[in-house]
Length: 183
Ligand SMILES: Cc1cn([C@H]2C[C@H](O)[C@@H](COP(=O)(O)OP(=O)(O)O[C@H]3O[C@@H](C)C(=O)[C@@H](O)[C@H]3O)O2)c(=O)[nH]c1=O
Image (cartoon, rainbow, N blue to C red; front, top):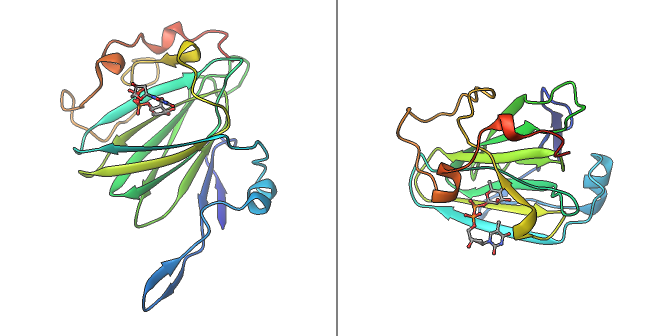
C-alpha cells in the first residue's frame, strides 16, 4: 500500500499494491493492520456504494455533525471521479482549504477523509461507481450540505460552469460562510 499525505496532511491518498497476472489483478482494498500503520484506527461501521450515470455529476459537499461525524475511505470502482475534501475544523490553520485527488477504477487509489472535513466529488466519466467506508452511521439529523461552488472555497471543479449535475438538496445548499464551529 502506497500512502501519501496531501497538502492538508490529514488527508491521505492510499494506493493498494496490485498483483497482476494473466487473469487480471488482485489487491487488498482494506487491511486493519495496514490502515492502523497509516494512522487510520477508527473502526468502519457502514459501507456505501453510489452510481452516477453521467459525467459532470457533483455530489457534495457533505458532512455529519457531532455526535455522528464520519471519517470516509473513498474509492472509485468503475470510471473515474475527482474527489475533494474541505477542512471544516474551525481551529485548523487550513480551515476552508481543500485538496483533491483523481480516484479511478484504473488507479485503484483511495482517499482517507477524517471527521471534520466536508466531502464531495465530481464524476469524470459516465457510469462512475463510488464505494466508501464510513466510521459512523448515516444520521439524517446530523447531515449538512454546503454549496459545491461556495465563492470562499474557490474549488477548481473539473466541470464547465453551468454544466454540473446536482441533486435538489445540493443545489439548494447554503454556502461555506455558514460553516462556523461545526468541528
Ligand atoms: C448518505 C445516505 C443516504 N441515504 C439515502 C437518503 C436519500 O434518500 C438517498 C440519497 O442520499 P443523498 O442524496 O444524500 O446521496 P449522496 O448525495 O450520494 O450523499 C453522499 O454524498 C457523498 C459526497 C458523501 O460524502 C456521503 O457521505 C453522502 O453524503 O439515500 C441512506 O439511506 N444512507 C446514507 O448513508
